[in-house]
Length: 279
Image (cartoon, rainbow, N blue to C red; front, side):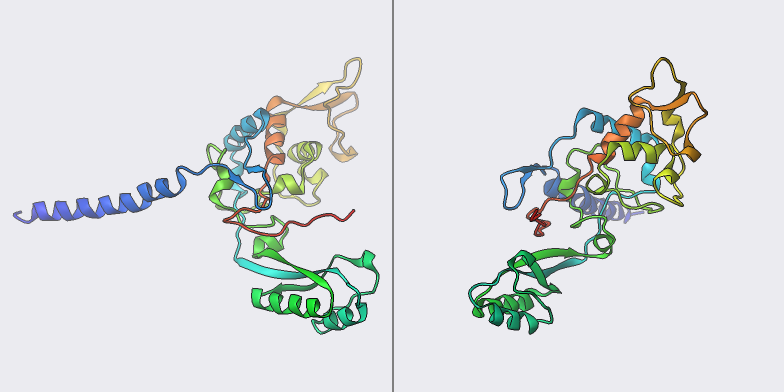
């Protein structure tokens, strides 16, 4: 018993150090996280969600959506793409330099920009751009995030703490019975599609294993005119003649939350080079 105090003191110190490391350390690192400037832009990220989307997060939580979906994109690393942007005054020399990289390019400038080397190291990208430059052409190095989730098309970069600044609670999830949703608003940003998917998942995704959330909708008899909010369902999923399916406020809020999920801007802690449309 005379050593009891020392045992207690040792346990107290061990628990205190653990608390400092896991709780206080996390608060110091992430507890003061705020908006950041998007790389190569003056825009701030993330922006506060609209009111309907904020309310939809609570519906998402209440219906247990995090039991089957995650909101965290995994990233294993970064690589570089080399993009030819101009042929210069000596297209033949540039074509030869590009061929040396294992790619082919026509003389037509409307074929540019063109990725001539994909998923290489920074050293390899530097050597390729130097070769193109010495031939008279112009090339850029684009940073590309890599990983299984990115290869699946679920996002363009890994999730970071700042992505969840306005989420309370944060719905990370730990099971993927369905796809990750961290960037679903960029992939499937149509509210009508989301409502159809909630009411009858197989009406828009053949063979979907997702259960229908039909209790978030009302089946009503059509009055003088159909409701402008009524779902336009394919025949196998449509209600009986003379009836229509109308989303409740919870359904609309949940759809608004889903389309608000965008993790697609480059940040200091999650860099990548966005694709710019040439159209």
